[in-house]
Length: 287
Image 1 (cartoon, helix red, strand yellow):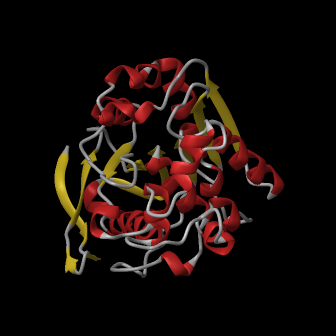
Image 2 (cartoon, helix red, strand yellow):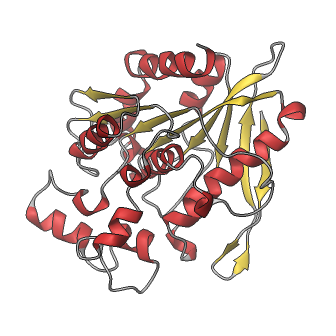
């Protein structure tokens, strides 16, 4: 484990801020395929120390696993900044691949909740220059695989499976969704600004360059509508991008541990769930 590696120093809240990552690399010979882990946190927080057990399990399968910080709404940052941060971390890791023991040609992103959304955006936007910011721009940020666990896709429909009151709260001006799309103090919403909603939707960018995706969602998710992952799967099929969706029966939102409900994450730490993820990574990065 190497901790607190600074991979970028972008502006956030009007000040430069170091963004850091933690990297686990198996102590075996040869360069390792890389998995960049993107934690959840409601677009409000991004704790790179989260879910160490799951990250370690993936590392034990022979992968270098980097867990990254990214900019959030607490500094007035938007999804564009978050996607740019993920891509910046990938470029940094590729630029330092030799010294870190990484195979720069085999890179996946794996995210949960808000991180799942950013992972989907990252893989969908392979080759999109508009999200490239910062250093190491001579390196590619393209990825070869995406693991999206209970992430959002079409933000205007994020509450479709919930009651009318919850749905209205999600779409209200200044909600955590709208703050991440439009920034602080904006009265605009993804429900009424259709162009902005399309620009924030990974489906908009899907094409021949997009990475294959595995998406997993609990059918008892109370934070992000389970239909969000079905919307993404349908978009993948329409654009002929490889995609597979798994529904975890009885599972709630796996990132509820950061909201004080650790039991909500238990179904997401089983081998029954982690197995399809590591098999997918094996296929895309080692096949």
